[in-house]
Image (cartoon, rainbow, N blue to C red; front, top):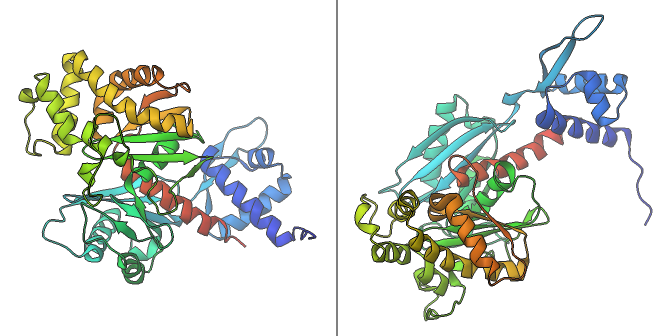
Length: 397
């Protein structure tokens, strides 16, 4: 089939998109620098910048002193040309953030969802709060991504199953899109943590890696070829169900805590291991024996006290799952995240790497997450920004 030649309109749009992406990643830039990086002539670069200025996408943000003659104007993307919202939805907390088109976090709020069962109403309230905090109207939003526990059906975009959030069900996504009037996406929380890791953390720019979420619940974010792998039903990464030696197989798959690997490294298992090593008695809190806060605190205390026997045994258990993933996917890089992974830090990651190397021929590098703040919320904003930039940067002509 013959290919269509590039029309002037299409070429201008492609040049505009390339220039905007360059200004985001390397800006601010002068007209000459933009032309040098893109291969455009000064005249074409000037026309491009004028076009983008007319659409309020680019503005002069400063000057660059040169040799003879006047200073050169520096151009940058206008941050307020579009905004996005990201949400991290948990049973006991909703975190919402607004970012501008450059990715700068403008506002962040948290809300207690207790006593409110309607997901759409909860989300609308959180969006209103965070937009008010950012000083913008909801109509300024270009994309909106929600991170939540559970399996998201890749065909419909709805939550197919969530043990912790039973009110999130088929139909919620359509209601949100109708009420908010904004493109809305629901995504698994661990997948979003993987996006954040690739954008800001230990997997910066890495195309093939796996993020292991270790905490009260277990999960994987699988990045292959720079793209998330979700699986046919959206269930890729549900590592808690991995069969492991010495642990019984589940008899009822509707009980998420019954998975073999979950029994080995889940919240109850870590708490029991900490108690056996005399660590549990020094940890206090209100989150319960197997809550995320106390489980992470057990591990954090063990690192601070140099409880090597506890860390070695915990690493050996985690290595069972990491090795199984490594021999199937051979990602080269494993990132530990979640309450347990982040609390264990480099000390735990190094032990997991050594334990995996003893049983796995591919011997992946194991590191701890380097994402600052809430990784799920940051990943939701990364995903929303990708969508918003596709809209805004592809419609300049």
